[in-house]
Image (cartoon, rainbow, N blue to C red; front, side):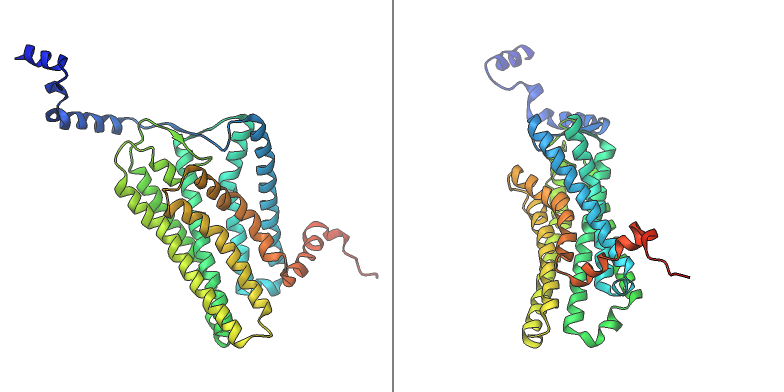
Length: 347
């Protein structure tokens, strides 16, 4: 009988040892192997393999990072140097947005610049998971904060008489804490789902940093259920916040057109600045997390926007035509940079 099986195998018939009857045993051994091994590091495919382009990208990335830090630090100092601005909820939230943007850029950009300089493309498993956690923690907190800023503008424009009551400082602090807590829960759930997956073989990440969509593709098991949960967490969260923001600003713009035709210019500019920032953040995130079927180059381009470009542009957008911010910025050098140059009173 064994001889017949061997002859059948030679004749092109699948032998018994490789038939479907042995599949459960092989699957069990495979699962045991996957649980026993885990990749120690991941390798980034990066933005380019050309050395001249890498050097050019290094200069551009470092310039963007330095400008991001300086711009956001300047916004933070400007808000705190002027007590009048610090008392206003909008500028209080803006200072916190700058803190998030500076931290968000620091999660990704230094590693990218280092990899471009030394031609290194690897990151440890723990480092990759840390990058995912802080990226989604700060990104989720920023989405909730932008939604809160839209609510602040809605109350200020549509319900001005009750604004000081609804947006008093203790309540603003509580709402801000909820934004950070929401970002933490979002990031923790993302990381929990990723850590449940076994990574036993492929370790090439088709991106320049660790993010959930690319890491999930490297798992050794069927990830359809995990992808649905991650889609509900990241993609739908981004979409819901984006829709809420659009509805809020639509109501605000309608109110401005109907009741504040002459004096609504400043509020209209503030809303347009908010909408610009919202679009720069949410649209790339929707491409990456809600529509994962887009090609890889599209995902990389979108990732560049919300990790490098948006943190750089936010301070510029909010301060370019804001007269209050420009006037307060003129006080920053006198207070923080050249305090000893201030004129002294003659005795």
